[in-house]
Length: 232
Image (cartoon, rainbow, N blue to C red):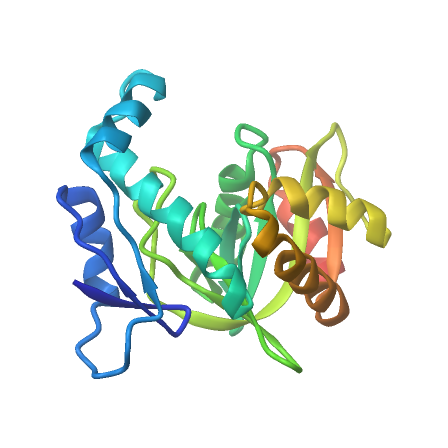
């Protein structure tokens, strides 16, 4: 099947329902040439399953494998994975990024509670950003971290927010060194030498075009209000 992901024609042939279901909104029937071809072997899936957490299905591992391939091969097109929960409010997307278990999905649910119909989740784990000369767009992908929220939607990027747990809620602006360190661990960072220069170029362009924040927060409703007042 052919999909249109971040305006890249992407061809893949999923065997399991998880990816087929998530891919359906991204189906592409145009005549543009394929930009990215993805292929996952059964041997690789079996290896992933041996290393997977208890309870993971082979379909989930297939979706994960396709996402790994896409996120590396898209780098040369100015596309970057940001491991984040992406919410949209008033027409702009905000990415809340953190290591697994810190609570990015918990935090974005606080926004849903606080702002109701003004907010929705675009992708809860694996959105990408597409870099242009003068703007950055957040694009949905058919890749999922388990929530099932993976919309085919593109919005201007409002800001990228790195989450840290804390007793109280506060927002600060990180310096470029801290931004690069945090971004590195929340994107497709294990790349070949051939892609490393392009990845660094993508980082530089993103730094020039995007606002970044660090949000220290608890899990109370005021965390969303504190973030909103500082970043929107």
